Image (cartoon, rainbow, N blue to C red; front, side):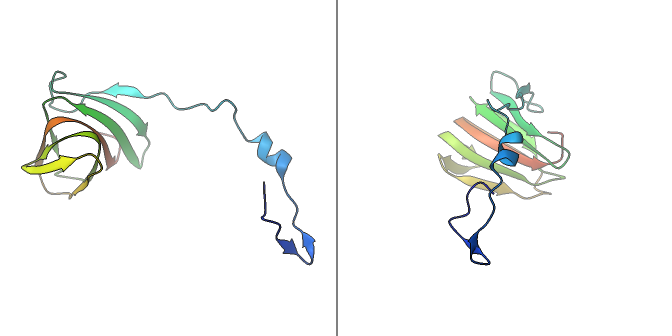
Length: 126
């Protein structure tokens, strides 16, 4: 415990573990390196991607869409979060702050416009 909001245990303040906390803190923070990723089937002039997180359970990518991106949601769902700009998914308008869950089995999905998105999905491959 770093701080315990002055709670009591048996009438006495509970023990804090400041040194243990300091022993496990990495300072300055070491962030995992992001890497450029190719958005499957997309021309780099139309969109660029950066893989932010990749682990056995899920992948998170940042896409800069300049024209359009096509991706498959055949075998797994995908979550799209719009950070900046505007565009469309299929023919549905998207704006900053919008979030879309594309269900698995949907097939090919097309994003069009000029915007920044976070793409999240289960597994390791795009």
